[in-house]
Image (cartoon, rainbow, N blue to C red; front, side):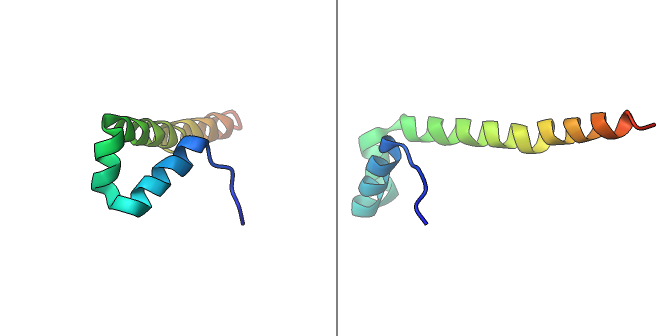
Length: 63
C-alpha cells in the first residue's frame, strides 16, 4: 500500500539508503533533528494531552 509522502522525505530516504544515518546528517545537518523533534512534539501533544483532555471533559459533563 502506498502512502503519501512529501518530496523531502523521499530525498531523505534515498540519502539514508545510500549512506546511512551519518550520511543523512552530513548532508542535511540539524534540519533532520529539528523535523523529528517537532514531529514527536506534535504527535505526543495530541496523544497524551489533547485526547485525554477531550475524553475527560466529555465524561465529566455526564455527572
